[in-house]
Length: 235
Length: 282
Image 1 (cartoon, helix red, strand yellow):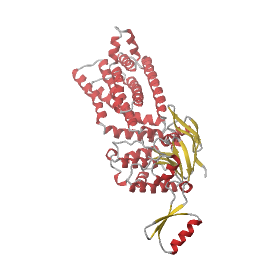
Image 2 (cartoon, helix red, strand yellow; image 1 turned 90 degrees about the horizontal axis):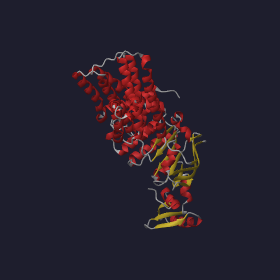
Image 3 (cartoon, each protein chain N blue to C red; image 1 turned 135 degrees about the vertical axis):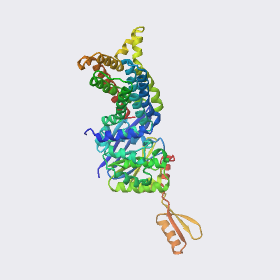
Image 4 (cartoon, chains in turn brown, orange; image 1 turned 180 degrees about the horizontal axis):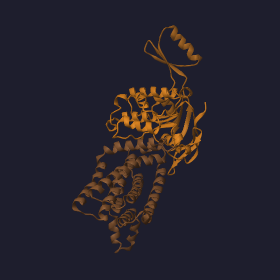
C-alpha cells in the first residue's frame, strides 16, 4: 500500500482543529516568543540565550504538545480507531507529528526575529533545527504513548522539559561533577555547540560531528517510538 | 456460501484466568451472526481477537480466510468495521468533522457522511459538537463511523445498548439494509429481542465457552415444551399439548366457538439461555 498524503493531511487537519480549541495546551506556544521579546528588548545577545529559547521551544512546544496530542488520543480511545483504520503506522505518526513540526518552525522563526538572532549560516542552523525537531517530536510521541491521560502526559514531560530546556546549565556543573560531562552528548547541547561553531565561521563540513550526534538521537528515539507504538496496537 | 470467520479451539488466558476456552464457530459470508452472553462471558475478548487487537493464547482464528495476525495489514483493515463500547470520538469536533476524518482514512467519498447519518437518524445534528451529545447520540455516531466505508464485515459490540426503542428500531432497519447489500455482521448483544429479529444464527457464550449455536427458531423449538395456551371466552386459559391429544380438545373448543386466542408456548431466547446456562443475561 502506498504512503497516502490524503490520510496524513486528514489527521493533521483534525489535530489542528482540536488543538486550536484546546486552550489549555495551545496557550504554551506564546511562552517562547514572550521570552524572546523580553531578551530582545534587554539586548541579551549570546548564543546560550538564543538557544535557551530554541531549546525551550523544543521542550515546551514540540515535545509537550506532541505528548499531549498522543496522550489525548489514548485517553479518549481514539488512537485505537486510527490504528484499526487502513492508515499505516507511518501515515498515522506523520499525520500526528505534522502539527507539532509546523508549530515548532513558526515559533522558532518568530522567537528568533524577536530576540534578533541572525545565524551566520542560516542553512546549516536550519538543518540542525529541523533534525532536532524530529528528535523532540519522537520524544513527545514516546512519552505520549506511555501516558494514559493528558494529565499524566503533562507530568511525564516535565523531566524532559527541564533536561532539554536548561541542559546547558548542567554542562556548567560538569566541572564540579565530572559525571555530568555525559550531558555534552545530549541533542540540545550538540545543537548549541553547532550554533557556536557556525557563529565562529564554521561551514557544513565543520559541524558534521554535531549533526551526526543529533541524527543518532533521532534514530534512537524513533526506533523506540515505533516499537512502542506497534506494541500499543495490541492489548 | 463461504466462511468469512473461522474460529477453532480459540483460547485466551489473562493472568491465569481463562477469558475464553475451546471456542469453535464459523460465520458465513452475508449472515448476521449473534454472539450472546452475560457480561464477562468473553464476547469483547473474542471481538478483540478477531479484529487483531488482542493475540489469542492458543487456537486458530481466521478472518477473510487469513489468520488474524494478518489483520495488522492495512489492506485487511479496509475490509472490516468495528464498533466497541470503548470506541472514542473527538469531542471538540462536530459529528461531521469526526466522520470526515474517517471518510478520508478509508478513502470513502464525503457523500457517505449523509448516508450513514441517515441510518443512525442523526442528519439534523451533524454540525453539533460531540461534547454536547448524549451517550445514545455518541453511540450512534460511532456506529455511523463504523459504517462509513461499507465494510464487508462489521463487528458490533452492543450497538444499541444506550439507545431508546425508536432509535434501536431505526438502526435495526439500517443494519438489515446493509446486510442485504452483502455486509456480514458479527453482533454481540444483551437484547434478546434484537438477536431474535436480526440474527440468522446465534451462539450462546457462557463462562468463555459456546453452549449452543443455531438459528433463533431452532434454538427456541429445541427447548419448547410442546404445549399451547388457549384463551377461552369464559376468560379461562387452558394449556394443551401440541400433538394429536391436544388436537381433539382444541377442535372441541373451536366447534363450541369458545376460543379467543391460541398461543404456542415456545420459550423466548432469554428463557432458552437461562435453561441452558442457569444464568441470566445481564
